Length: 423
Image (cartoon, rainbow, N blue to C red):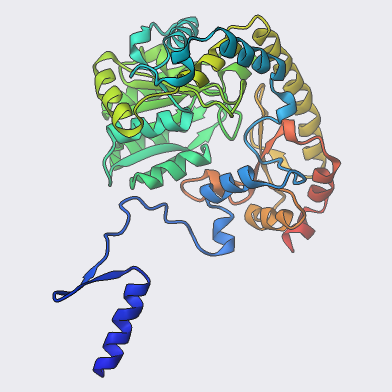
């Protein structure tokens, strides 16, 4: 190659920021690649089953778009008056430090005491000193992953599972293995095989109302999971974000374990508001200091204002009525939605007793990603099954949120699901 060709190539690399020039010393690589990469697929079909893409689509959606695959309740279902009352109370009565200062390293003391009382109702004896506030349930899980995982570790998840678990674990550069989730919890035989062969560091799950299936963990399966976790030295992370949706209390891994091997995380975004972020972590006492140091290093501390507003809503006399009304409304929606989906040829994998989710199998021969891509052209955001599957075994499934299934346009689209899929 001529000298001018080499110079031109270097000039182009410099313009793109890949290299930089040091006068008299030559050219050098400008910066290392980012250590964390979500490895987002570039093709449109692949992005339709990418968790980050799905979450972005839900958050960036046009107000006119329909989102039966979305994971949270419509704004009209939320406790607007309770939130407004809490905003007024905190603004009126809060000391100046509540409006402007960071909170303590452990987080908002009233919220921690509230969580401890709630866990005591589930027979989990925990001190507020074992509870650390976070900015959300996802933030709580991120802190746990930072604290316990290293790149290359193996993490076991339910298959299917909440799709943001997969996105977050990908960012932490760990190996993710899915275990089939049945009507009463994880498939114990498969769990045992993965525990033996994969030597996972963590197992992440929902116990109360499983996302996306709506299934409920049974006491027998919970006991067997914990026995296997102990035998193979696996830490269990139990996400309890849907506790307030329960019709009757389900088995909790933390109840059986007492926070020896189980970490409890949760938040209040699904029943109070997603606008002020407030979550928590409950752990064994000897992990608290390490997590607090990590919390301070990565984000200093939680905000007092958001936690104060959240606590004011949770302790308002109207909150219990709000939750009861929400459960009743979800029950009524679920009955109608299940009936209509069945008549359209979609089969519920589990028929949930509570919560917002229904996990359905499409008619034979249909691919959920193709259906979701076709629906997007009609302004409808669906949640295709492989978004939730670490092993890619849910290509024929869709998750529905019954609270977002009131519009007839959704059912018209599903009635022509083969046409929407282009088959």
